[in-house]
Each structure stands twice: as C-alpha cells, then as structure tokens.
Amino acid sequence: MKHTVLIIAVFSAVLMLQTGCHIGGAYEPVNTTKYDLENRSKFVLLDEDIQDAVTCSGLQERFTEDGRLEINANIRNRIEGRVTVQVNCVFKDEQGFPTGDETPFQTLILTKNAQEGVRFISMNNKARRYTIRVRSVH
Image 1 (tube, rainbow, N blue to C red):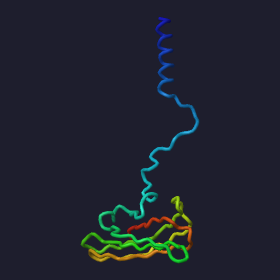
Image 2: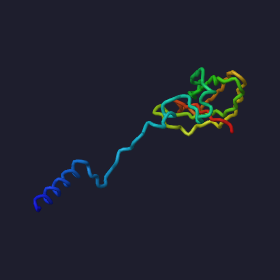
Image 3: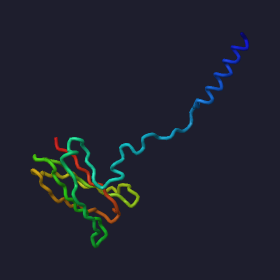
Image 4: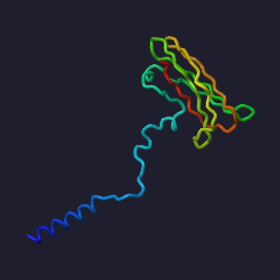
C-alpha cells in the first residue's frame, strides 16, 4: 500500500515536470500576424461590408523634386450600385513605421462600375512607404 502511494506520487511529480508546469517569467506573443495587413499591404479595406465592392486597380508612386512621396491610386467600384467610401493615406518610413504624416479621410462617391483617381502627397521627405486605407460611410 505504501509502495503504491509512493509510486503514484513520484509518477505525478514526473508528469507535472514533463507537461511544463510554467511558473512565471516571460511569454511569447501569439497570433502576431493575424491582423497586420496594414503592415504588409499598400491598399487595405477597413470594413468588411465593402470588401466585394471596392478595389484598387492601380497605384503610381513617385518622388517630387523636394523628396516628398506622391501616390496616385485608382479606386474602382466593382458592383452595379453606387458606393460611398472614405479614403486616406498613412505615410511610413523605410522600416514601415508611421512618420506622423497621415492625410485626413476624404469622401469618394463611386457610381455604378466607376473608377476614380485619388492623389496623396506626403508633407515631408521622410516617407518611403505608405498604406492607403478605405472605410465605408455609414
């Protein structure tokens, strides 16, 4: 009887050590790339309800004479009805961090199957990357 209790106690201790009984310390983050599309893409939709309706059919990037980044984007309505969205641009440095230069949202009305051009120019010469963001108007 004493041997059985001792064996169970030793077995339980070994099992706890093998399963990784973690007591404090640092933890690794989980799902770090799950919602980071803005970090990887030049064009993102912020609302699910416009996912089938709006797309970007072309991007043109150039630097002005004074080193500022200029972006021209063709925003296209892919559905048979009128769509009203708001568009802005977040300018980022070469590592992808915001430079503090973000344009205000501007309203864009896209009629049935229409395409409209939108232009963004950074306020300073720090911008090397960007993300154009589109959200629906409720």
